[in-house]
Length: 141
Image 1 (cartoon, rainbow, N blue to C red):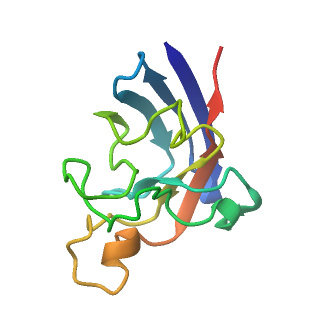
Image 2 (cartoon, rainbow, N blue to C red):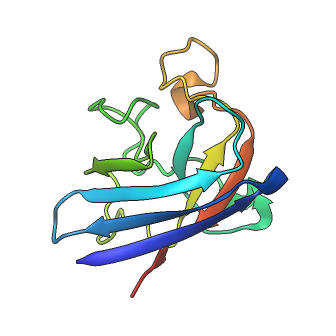
Image 3 (cartoon, rainbow, N blue to C red):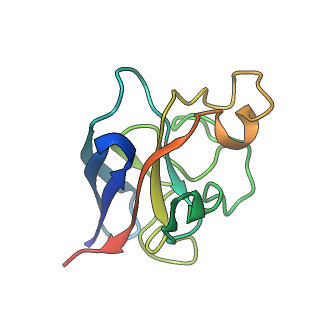
């Protein structure tokens, strides 16, 4: 079993811890909690870079190794990101060429429209708003 963790910190007291586990070649289970968020839904994505030198802005774009448009976790065609912190997902492995280890988790200030909102950013980012917290995904012992 491979385990990873991301400790999230952000603006205005937003913080949390996200845990990732993967058994063999199976899907990755993502669990955890984030506190300090305004009430309502929030985008929750894996971003391409594990770089927080400029806060959450330096984490780059969404991690999208297959070049898909943005979508919901249950959509077959979508980015390799998640929209919840209590799911099992086969698009975010902890091993292999598309591993998310060393990348970042970002929580956004607004709800993710799952690529279906009609906004110019819907198909690329889910139009989820500002980055309010982030953390680098690292291996856990």
